[in-house]
Length: 196
Ligand SMILES: [Zn+2]
Image (cartoon, rainbow, N blue to C red; front, top):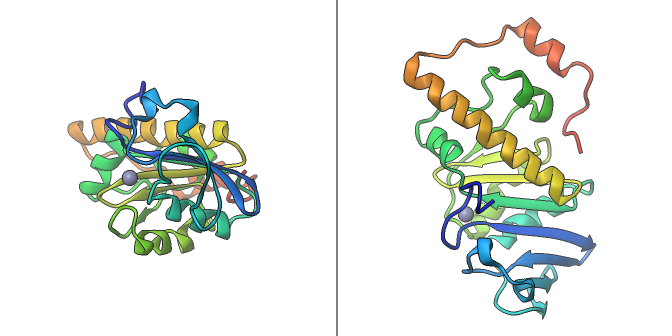
């Protein structure tokens, strides 16, 4: 994430669910590009530090919300990738059917309302959205992706940011063309959503 510029400084957080009340989560306020193993914290739903150095990220509440809503996921990634965040500031939605690969992977990527990062409100706001989507844009803030494992959640993050970059660059040239309803239907017909 750090090497690809999806986070800078101390941005972002990653967690995995080990069982119903046991999680690994990156420590708060540390650069994830230089994260030692000791700062991957073993924690629970009360955000207690059971093992590891540092404190659990305040944004872990948002992860817990997503885990509560989805039994089928075991990993969550939150990052601040540039192009996806820029599109949210410019009110350009990733639900508009433009890129087949994005549609086949994630169907659509909705943008939630704004909430203060790391707040209880932020944890609440994602609930209705994360039930049916594996990636969300957090307005003014960044991206959250979920998956059956970290590789899948990371792959979704990469897909969202790469798509955002293409759509951003297109907007510099012109208003993008959009797939027809029929073209869109052909892409999503054979899948159940959300896919994990
Ligand atoms: Zn954040």
